[in-house]
Amino acid sequence: MPEPVIDAHFHVDDVPALGWHMPASLALEQLDAAGVQTAVIMTITDAPEVNPTALEMIADVCAAHPGRFEAYARIHPWYGDESERLIVRAIRELRFVGLKLHPVSTISHPADESSLRLIRAAARLGAPTMIHCGDDPFCTPLELEQAALRVPEATIVFGHMGAYFHGHDALAVAERCENVMLETSGCPYPELIGEAVRRVGAERVIFGSDGPGCPPAIELDKVRRAGLSPADLRKVVYENQRALMDRVER
Amino acid sequence: MIVDALVYAGDCLFGGGRALPELLAEAAAAGVDGVVAAPAKPRDYDLAAASAALADECAASAGRAVCLARLDPWQADAAEQLARLLEHPAVRGLLLHPWEETFPANHERALALAAQAAAAGRPVVVEAGHPLVAEALALADLARGVDGTVVMTRGGQVNLSGLAQQSADLALEAAPNLRALTAGMYRQDWLEGCVRRFGAARLLLGSCAPVFDLGYEAERPRHAAMGDDERAAVMGGNATVLFGLATEE
Image 1: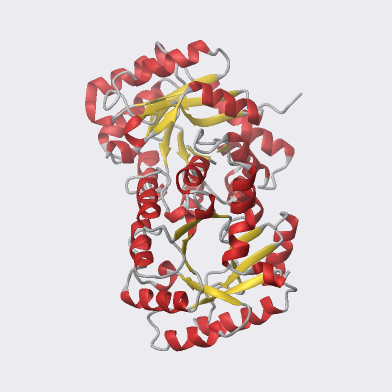
Image 2 (image 1 turned 45 degrees about the horizontal axis):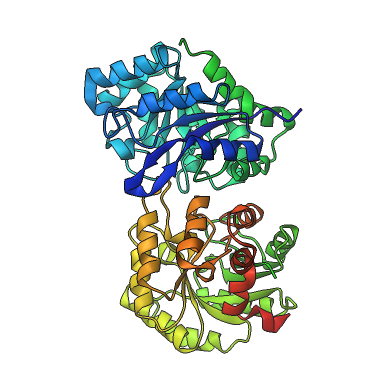
């Protein structure tokens, strides 16, 4: 039996303005090539703007391929009641397993009340929030920490775990905030993934690829270079994301 | 021949430095036959001396390593040092590091050094993508003033949202003498698109190790979707010609 793997970060969308075409068929092709059974998919664009049908499109993809996809809802925080209604609907009606915030695409500070409101709404349903965590404004680990501190009941997943220049900040924040988990995509340093497991525990590090731009085969190769024990590797590539999804009240 | 077109060798001011023999061992383990080495930033800040010492090491490497002279354009004697270093048979080009030496990549002092290297028939490798100092279009601006090849590291990008991709494409389009290294550009589809849009001659494997993991970075172009001839060019054919490694085999 191949080792079970869940890819916690994969995009399905079509964004002609950027020339980014990311159909479900490409996701399946890459997941099969990497031996990955399931991916958590999300759009690049946010609902309700600039993509009013983002949630329905992702829900349709999940329904068309049972067992292959779970979903995070990318929601724009600026729309107040409508945004909160969308995250609740995504989890309770469309069976999404979490919220994804990208503070660059939405120009929304993660600790602004508009973002916190969504994080709280997801947490009330047992769902985690993944936030893009890298070198961009509004996305650094120290900025995300302000959100994690304000919503301690929420599980905050640092997508990309700090990227190129903020990886050590991401680890330090995760050491301070027990509600923070680190997701490996976009972190170009296998050694740092190993260090993250040593410092915050294998239970708080999650494999993600950020596919299809970064295919899961090469991203899994990176995680396997981190020097993890077989038990820790299994937690990172499967058990942790499985546990997160199992807690969601959908 | 598989060539890593940029590694940083020697003791490093910022820690984590690796000696050339260690990097060559890592390269061999990754199936990489040769490396182009530049000095890491030395603790004494003496880039010219570090370059000279590394050039001697490369000359003694039985053809497995060649050297880039790394210089700081702010230093008054940079041109003189470059002229001296280019006389060393193992020195095959110039490395500029706008991030660590703190200058705009298209500053007139950088341009003067790059033009000097180009006039001697040597390529110029520039640590690129760093915000404020070395964005891709600044590299294109530099390349426009140089009658020779300019190579930008990291695909000219340091942005995990993919927001630097379009400017990197525009830079490669604007400056035909500009090429890109693979490492640190995390998007496989950009590497593939670079070859498709601009040709395999414009892309070179270059790990920037030990900043990035040499073995992992060597795998990325191996996994990218491109033709066998294109992959051979990216994995070493381009670098072999550009940095003259074939003459050392």
